[in-house]
Length: 124
Image (cartoon, rainbow, N blue to C red; front, top):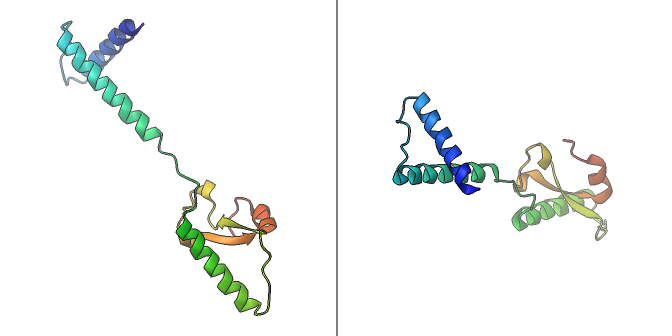
């Protein structure tokens, strides 16, 4: 199964190269075929690696700490004697991650769970 695919690919690459006048059509010798196969493999690897770059939704610890510190400062400035409920807060992206927002500390905020779920992927 590999041999027909190899010859078809080599013929296609050779035709494309001849159309653009870059190189001559590869001959039937083994060294030319090996060279074209190597070029094809490198091209496929480059294309696959370019498409597989996926952004991570992981929020770094530094961003979490800075967002938490900012939240505490704002909360105690507004409510000097207030108490914070434990477990009822989530980290949120001000500019939604789904719309290109980053995990930078400036884009992360702490919100109550209910408010975060209500906000969804909207920008405030």
